[in-house]
Image 1 (tube, rainbow, N blue to C red):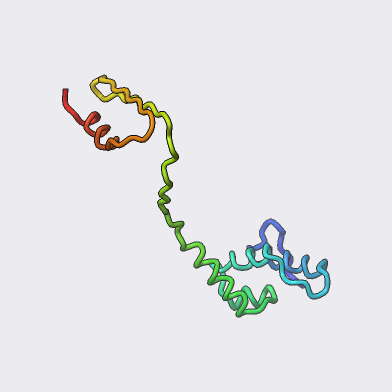
Image 2: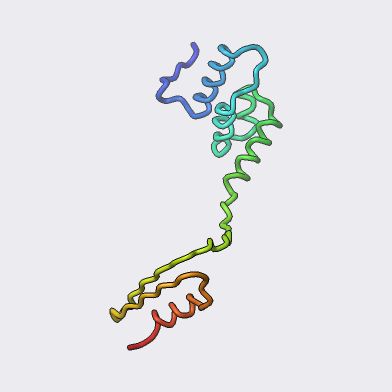
Amino acid sequence: MPRTQHPALATPLETVKLQFKTWRETRKHRCPIPDELWEAATGLSDQYSVHRIAKVLGVNHTTLKDRIATRKAMENTEPQACFLELPAPPVSECSIEMENRHGEKMRMHFAGEVSLDLLALSQNFWTRES
């Protein structure tokens, strides 16, 4: 007598196998396997061998292996931070107000091009002792 298993107790591999079965029964002739099914299949690689997944799902072993390798490479890639320096827009007028930890305030107002080193001036204001 065949063993039946409750759907809630199905293993991940059996669940994906059912998804492939449903797709195969409803697909149009010779259409490629959808990306969602490939993602489900490659997601099983942490629990099952490539050989077992390919055999149970009825997919090409080499294609599955390549897709798993691509997925793992993408998971291990950390986004790279980059710094993009933008040219300062021409400013006709600018006001800067600062208050340091001693409560002292500095207000600067500039019109036209500024030839001062504003960073050095600001750092001097922030770090000076009263």
